[in-house]
Image (cartoon, rainbow, N blue to C red; front, side, top):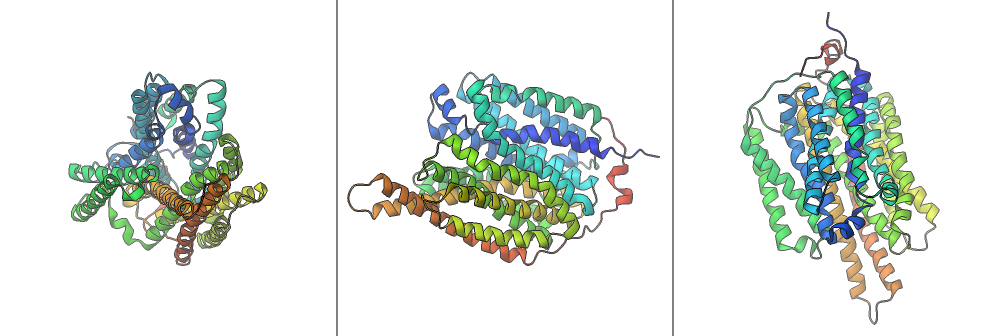
Length: 486
C-alpha cells in the first residue's frame, strides 16, 4: 500500500520558500533613494528595480501552466528556488546598476514561477472543504511578507547597508532548498503537453507589454498620451487577442482560456483584479498624500500604513477558515460594502484629518480586502476540474502584476491630472497651501474612480455562489500518491 503524503511537511516547505522570495518584492522600496546615490542614477532608472520585477513575473506566470505539467513538484520547487538564489547572489555582489538589475530580474523569474507551483500543488493536495484555511495560510505569507519588506528594509539599510538586503536572504534560501531536497514529495502527474512556441512569444509580448506600458504611464509626464506608451499598449493588446484566439484553436493550449466559461471562476477573478487594483493603488497614493499635504517623512508614512498591512496578512487564515465554514457570500458581500464605505471616506480626505482616523480607516480597508481577495480566488479555483488547475492558477497569478500595474498607473494618472488642472486654474503665485490643496483634489478624483470600481465589485459579489469542485475525489487524491525521485 502506498504511504500517505506528509502534507504538513509539504506546506511548511512551500511557506519557507514563498516567504523569502515574496519578501523581495518590496524589500528594495525604502533603499531606492540610497541606490540612486550609490550608482549615480535617476529616479526613472532606479524604478526599473520594481517595474522590472513585475515585468518578469508577468511574462513567466503564463508559462508556469506548461512547466507544471512538464516537471515534477520537486524539480519545479528546487529549480525555481535555485534560480532565485542565483539572482540574490548576483544582486548582493553587484558592482554596478546593470548587474544589480540583472540579479533582480533573475530573482523575479524564481518568484514568478514559484507562486503558481505552490497554488497548484495545494489545490491537488487538499479537498475543497478545507481549501479556504489552507489558501488563507498561504495568503498570510504572500500578504505578510510584502508588508514587512519596507520596514525591515529600512532597518537593514540604516544599520548594515543595502547589500545586506540580499545577503541576509541567502542562508534562508539555501535552507529552503536543502529542506525541500530532503522532505518535499511530488504532487500531481507529469503529462508533458506539446510546447507551442508561438503562444509563448505572443503571451510574452502581450503580458510584458501591458505591464511595461501601464507601469511607464504612471511615471511618464505625458501619461497615456505618450506615443511610445500608446504604441506599446496597442501592440500588447493585439498580441493578447491573437494569443487568446490561438489558445482556443489548439488541442493542448499553453494557457487554457476556457476556464472563463466557469461562472464562479470568472466572477471570482474579476473581484480579485478589482481588489488588487484598489490595494496597489492605495499603497502608492496614500504614502504620497501622507508625505505631501500631511507632511510626514517616508519612514513615518510607512509605519502609519504598517498596522493595516500586517493585519491584512494575519487575518488571511481567519478569513480562510470562515470561508470553509460559511462559504464566500457571507464574507465577500459585506467586504465589498465596507470597501465602498472606505472609498467614500478617502474621496473626501483633507489635510486637517486626524491621523488616528486615517490609520483606523486604512486598517478597515485592509480587513475588507482580506475578506474578499483570498475567498474570491479560492472559490474561483474550486469550480475548475483538476486538469484546469495549472491554467486557472496561472491566469489568476498572471493578472496580479497586470492589475497592480494597471491600478497604479490609472490612479496616479488621474491624481496627477486632477492636481495639475487645479493648479492651472489658480491665478497669481502658487503657494504651498495651493499645492497641498491641488494634491487633495487629485486624490479625490482618483478615489472617485476607485469608488466606481468598488461599486462594480459589490454588484459582482451579489452573484457569487459557493463553487463545487466537479471531479475532486479525496479517496484517490494526490495525498495517497507516493513520492518519486528527481
